Image (cartoon, rainbow over all chains, first blue to last red; front, side, top):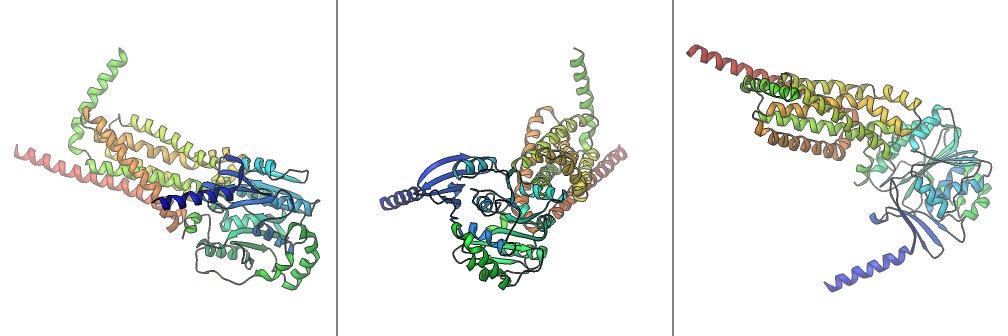
Length: 294
Length: 236
């Protein structure tokens, strides 16, 4: 028994050491928000008591560097559309994706939709995020925002879906009807980049849904990451040689953010690696979080 | 004084009604079972509310707030009117009508959800008020009818004044158990097995069948009591 106690105490010590110094703790309308810092690495964590992973991290001494694979992977859409002018990002987090976009394309307008006002405040206070004349944050749910934009005839040429709530993407943003509403704000040149997970039964359902909405899409995975980035657009997908050329043109500009764009084209796959017999997710059938556990 | 007089005279009238109603009252098990069904259906529809509203108004906390608010208000009004209706010649037929009515007025949730929500979405930008109005138009009428069931059931079950608290307690118990079952069943299993509209059709079917069952039980009982009373008349 004492040995068990000892190991528990040891584990707790290790855990607190790994968490480092807590800069900020807050219970918002949607989640528990924690900001920690270990050395130069400052991280935003949601629902830390449930053992969720870091949402976002920045190096306070090298702010431009993107720390996570999935954040870097979100820029693979540049292989299809290398010079976006109207960018939409659903889900702010620490704001590293919009900050990078605004640094890369100062002329582009960037709209960001974040449901939780507390996340916006934390991003501004701890993660160097700042609204500019070209970069606006809307505190809103992503789906009605996109639906309304579509009805107004607004379009975006680079759309990033990175909304997470609780366990996963909110159920009403996993459905075919939602993807159709996203298509309504896209043009022929628009690229859609979505951050998803590779594990769980939901992978099959999601893939079937995307396939029904877009036909072929790029599945982008890295061995080092549990994320699967979906890259879709309205035209037929470009040949790899074209993307390699784009990567060569852009890779210098992306180096300071630590995005290894040259390695990406060969990782974009159209191979069907999911069970195609799985049921499509619709507004009528979207038990996302129940499928996640299986 | 006048008020007390009114209350006294009403209770006299009611007592005589109870005496005539006693021999053709619905069995308690049937009434309690129906209270379970009403609780079950209320929570099944409420749990699906967010799924129905979220394509237009999102899945934020305020959308849940709108739905729960409207359900609470509708139930409150239903309790009041159900209680009042139970003072005028309470009958199994009216009781059955609540179920059939609730089923019928749930049909717009299935058939007209988009035509109802689209104009609201277009006119009201704020998703809080958008979802509030959508919840009113979709859920208020069927939920208030469902709310009438419990107080009316108390009236049908109470035969002596001193039982009233016990019967009310029993009905709260059973209908709240039904609500718990509806909540758990919908959120854990039904949404995994069925589409939203299939679950709603199931709810409508259960409500209308329940109404039919009450009418059938009532008719059978009346036939029996008619036979037995005519038998007594013959022997006399």
